[in-house]
Length: 215
Ligand SMILES: C[S@@+](CC[C@H](N)C(=O)[O-])C[C@H]1O[C@@H](n2cnc3c(N)ncnc32)[C@H](O)[C@@H]1O
Picture 1 (cartoon, rainbow, N blue to C red):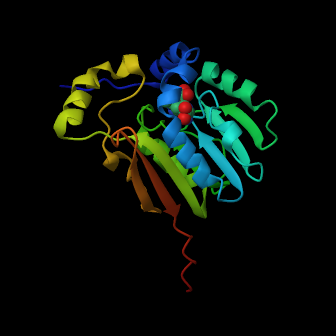
Picture 2: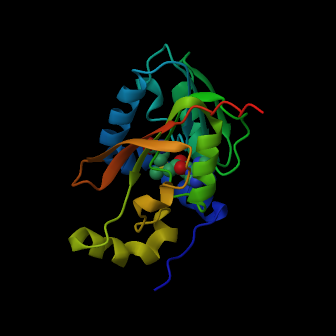
């Protein structure tokens, strides 16, 4: 059975529908992972890029010592994030942007986080490469995401749901291997989370650049 592919237009369309109800539906289901990732990021310093910031549910939770930039491809989701960020001095800016083509310099951020985004984007490999590129050497890339199972009841349900990807706006079948594509990112942590390990937090360290070989 072939899995439908999402393109950016299908994603925008899906999130145009989700935006008015997101905070009270999936936004709530996703709260545990979001809290966990943000409380970890709050122990860090410097510039944070949140990719696929959605309605900005995470934004008030970042500590004020951080400098946070958010982006999203959906104007309707982003409009809600902009309202939420109005009085948050630690949010430097929010932009409409495609995660597969980030308009930031290499190494521009100390922490790059994408929560519940990788299963949504049409080209996860391109997005992973962009997350790695804009992360500073020695910095961290953090994912919170649904990763599917091959077997068991959950695996069976996920495979049954696979054809609904376009309507749902995300891929129920999405293996961890699909984000393990950047050799410069070393996996530090992989923590299954509530409910029943449906979501996991993955933390990668971007290897410091090797000094150029002496001639
Ligand atoms: C499930 S929501 C997650 C929102 C938020 N991170 C949260 O924790 O609630 C997925 C978000 O990713 C955004 N998105 C999907 N594809 C994207 C892309 N290519 N570039 C940027 N954002 C994208 C969607 O518009 C949506 O807001």
